Amino acid sequence: MGCLRGPGPINRIGEHTDFNDGFALPLAIDRAIWIALYPRVDPCVSVHCVDYDEFGEFLLDAPINENAGSGGAKRSRFPQHFARPAHCYCRMGL
Image 1 (cartoon, rainbow, N blue to C red):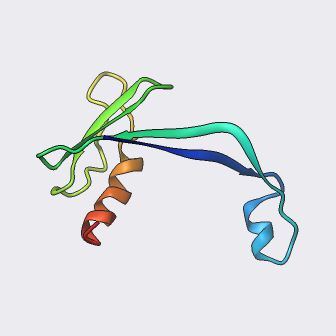
Image 2 (image 1 turned 30 degrees about the vertical axis):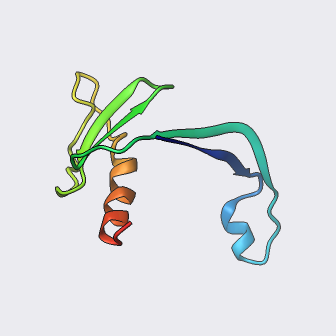
Image 3 (image 1 turned 90 degrees about the vertical axis):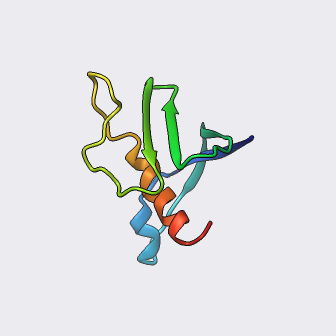
């Protein structure tokens, strides 16, 4: 099992300003994303967002289902935020 933390940065002036020789003011804020990982023997990935109480699953060996939801009455595309990069990593052999 592993636990990863990604700090929550913001760019006060605007992300694209910096690319055009302008001024940018990147700041760190007191927010972060935490991800707990553990291995599975099947190709299923389960994701759960604690803050919004959303849950979803997807298969690494199946095409991404654009209409996938949380499985309950409240439909969500939350799992898609994880499915796309996970599929890319698998194609790269990571």
